[in-house]
Image (cartoon, rainbow, N blue to C red; front, side):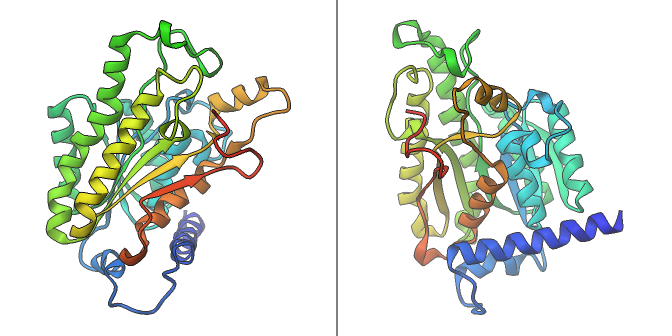
Length: 308
């Protein structure tokens, strides 16, 4: 157990250094606001809330042969990465079994994690979940990594055209992908504003930038989340809260997407969830004079906007 803990601690130190270099804040100065979150950890726990701590493409985590950062998709990678960086990670999603498994993986690496079941479409569920999170410590980072499920009976390669989209499905999807983010933001923004620091990081996609053929069932939701993020940045950045929207311009490696890649002639470049998660962590460590509001992450082996 001791060598494993040492490896996890070394991994966390490397992640923090990589985040600083990535954002241009590899500095010894202690006057910047960006230093405050790290300084605060001396007396309080650093808490990061990952909403969507698994993936709808993770096959319930049954592919145990995959690396931990890929086994549960981006949600799992985000949880592990922030855990390695020294945060007490609050894992939120609807599937309790997945949350327990991801929490166990974080603890096996020497980290701290608390699984909390949460339904982002239910006001009472969101309020109760964040009350549990605040009981651990002040929330320093909120990552919203939630997306609606596909319409029933379809997959990546069989998404419906506009005439086949059910309006009720679209309304439900908006409640998950946009209103859910708003509910969660309500729970963290007042305290972040009072503290003058904090990060709200929104997981987006290429379809947030423009619609594409057969993406009508999902693209409007990502458009809405991006718009909400733009508004939040303009309202809260002057108050010390960093709001950033991350455009994931590709297909994230996970159990389901590996199967998809096998169907594509010539293969499909998959994005490494760990590398994506490290970019989210780096955003949190940016100094306030050079905050990124929107970050697009594209694989080098495909054209920009590859999915559209």
